[in-house]
Each structure stands twice: as structure tokens, then as C-alpha cells.
Amino acid sequence: MTARRQWRRGVVAAALVLAGLGALDLLRLHEIARWNEQIASIETATAAQSIAALGAGAPAEVRFASAWAAAQGGEVTRAVALYRDVAHARPDLAGAALYDAGNALMREGERIVARGDWVGARPLLELAKETYREALRLDPGQWDARYNLERALRLAPEQEEAPPDPQRMGGESERSVTTMRAFTLGLP
Image (cartoon, rainbow, N blue to C red; front, top):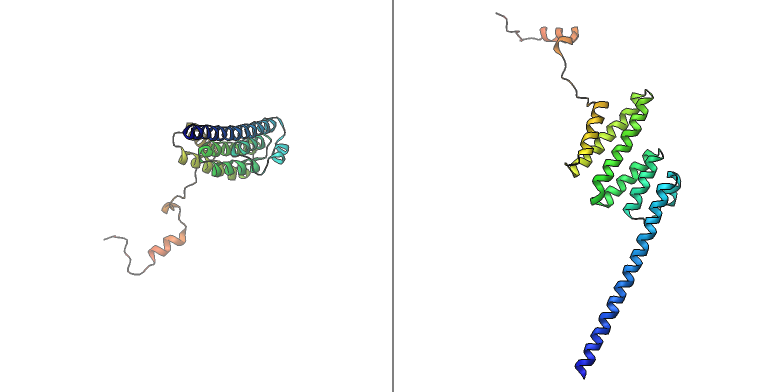
């Protein structure tokens, strides 16, 4: 009889544990549904409203959607900050977040270039190039980031410092070479 009683206690304990785990799953499912509703509202609201509605403890997915909404609303600085926050919080989303941050910077740079302001667009394009490079460091097979990096490089080519051209040096430099003591030009 005691073995049967122990078996019943074990069954009751297992049932209570399973009920508790089921309740935790239901709570988690309810929380996920609430975050999904917030993501859906971010996609339909203006970017400013969606950022204000963003909770402090929001998961990375909600911040990612909020960053997308901010980028669509023209709030590039806020969008890039949120994308970078997501990249630091979730390594599995880092490549996509950095790619989207680069896209936001690139679009804004292209918009400024379209107005004819190359000087104003240059910093944004440089940041876009660096952001695409970060995304490629995380995932070298990300062809979209590679393609957009190429586009950014065509818009704003890398500036390498060229060695000084001896043909274009001024008269002072020529004179300094020829007036130095104990220096021969190699002439017979």
C-alpha cells in the first residue's frame, strides 16, 4: 500500500510540475502576443509615436521594428541608434541590424546627394560604408551588404593619400636638394 501511495504522490507531483510549466508557457505566449501587437502598431503608426510607445524592456524584435519605422519616417539618427542597440543585444540579429543601419545611412546620403550637397552627404556615406563592413565582418556571405558597400564606394570612393609627385614639387624643394653639402647627383 505504501508503494501505491508513493506512486500517487509522484503522479500528483509530476502533474503539478507539468501544470506549472504549462502556466508559464501560457504567460510567455501571452507576452509574445502582446509584443507582436506592439510590432504591428509600430508598422502602422508614425515613427515618432512608435518610438514613444516603445517600452524600456522591449525585446530586440520590437526595437528592430521600431528602428525600421524610424528609418521609414526619416529619423535616421534614431534608427541607426536602435539598429546598433539590437546588434549589441542580439548577436543572431546583428548582421541584419547593421545591414539595415547601413541602408538607412545610404538612403539619407543619396537623398542629400540628390539635392547636390556632396559635402553634407560624405559623412553619411562614410558611415554607411563602415556599417556595411561591420555587417560583412559578422557574415561575409551577406551579398546584399556587399552589393550596397560597392554602391557606397562608387558614390564616395576611398581617398588614399598619394605619394608626393616629384615632378610637381615647388622650386624650394629642388633648390634644397641641389644646395646640400656632400651630395652628388651622380653625374661624372
